[in-house]
Image 1: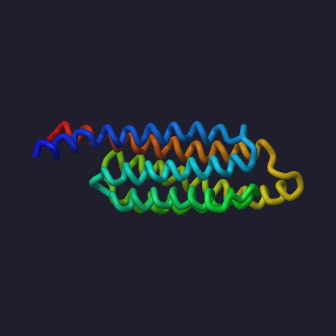
Image 2: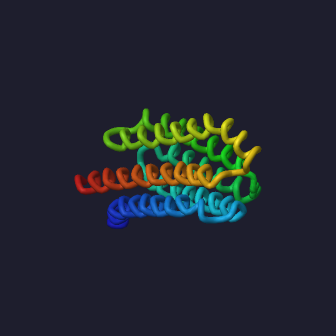
Image 3: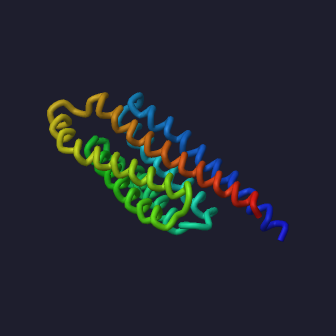
Length: 191
């Protein structure tokens, strides 16, 4: 009994640490414009893989919507794995993988939102909407990007935009985990 009480008290701190870790990963995403293309693809893969693993670990600590949260983390892990196993140095396939990841993740988070309660529901909706908006932004920009990349190659502005899209998604995910940790801490305090 005492160990389950201690575990229950430690869960909010672990989820909070996961949220902070993902927010820190956003700094790596924001630094993408400063690395070459080959290294950039590896960095994106490593960031997505790390974020996915952290998301999965945090999801295992949750009572509500655990399996959907694990599924969202698995989508992030899969995207990172695709980058690392097939390090395409061309800009367009990179955008396609991230676009698909953002849209799939937003759908999973949308379903999760319907099953959540309280302030976590609001943050899930914000996270789902943010990932969907970012994915659609990339999708709409894909045809323009194709033309620009074919004519001029990836411009620094395109790489910077891509980096900020990835960083924003990480920050919102981290903030969602911080809210979940806060709710878990409040619930533990009431017991």
